Length: 387
Image (tube, rainbow, N blue to C red; front, side, top):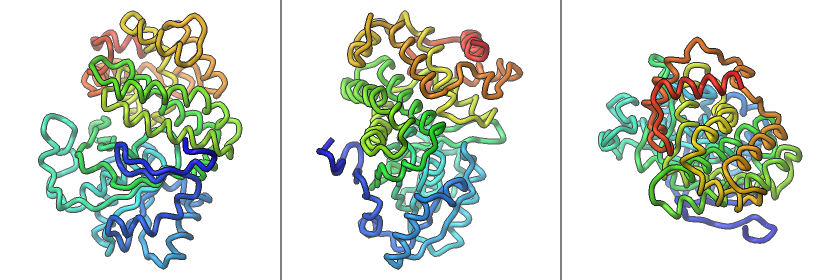
């Protein structure tokens, strides 16, 4: 962190304009990517809040005209993307601003991808070489501005979109979906209520944790993940209790981008279960990850012994090992008022077999340290359901 000003420019993995008040750079950065009339994509819950008013004032004062599209669900759907593409094509806009949490950023990146495509969205699912089907000249430029510290979608090359017909979350991928410019302004996260601060913060932690635990050789990703988890340990409780604490909000925004940078190494069973649960129950992704986390850590313990010793040492935990990490996660969840079981957020056993079958097929499952069968995923889900 560059001193007390929290102001620095990064180019890893993309161009990040980070710091308090960096939202004011928006007019200049729109010019950098050649956008004169942006299509502003956000979610309906953000439209009436101060961060959105700040954004509009900056555009209005710069005499930049724009269109607003806010029909985005918390778990964005294919229809949300289709509606956004249709509205964009009816406007005279020449680029996208994606403003908000992970839902708005994922939807915004997907809409920017689809502006000039002739194939349906699902043809670009992250399977094999599907990404090569994209007509690159049909993509709109996209600048992103996160208002939560969780998904890290601002530095990602993919969007997670729910296929409502199949009740399945689908990863849409193309290398050019990586936004060319990110405005990461911690002040925009001050208005995030404690419950969402907790859920999104645990989402950032889950990205770092699963990337760190994923097998394979990627020391850079592991190093980023370790430090990201330390930042969450140090700063999430403060951000939860003191929403306008600049240092805590800044470091959580850093941890979020670190998690999304690290998980190019892989994810795991937490996400493999969270994806179908989110698609079927429309539950908050970060909350699902937070609830599932200790159950998956316990199941994976035999395969991650050495890594948990290193992680516990890095976090300053006593008796380093898997159990000390699990105990600390449980205590952190208690501090953040995170429920202990899935049943506490309205999930039941009615879809257990289906969730297990979807978890096995989810791309995240391949990064888990242990490859579980559908029956094992069902058992893991049931344990997280009942405690």
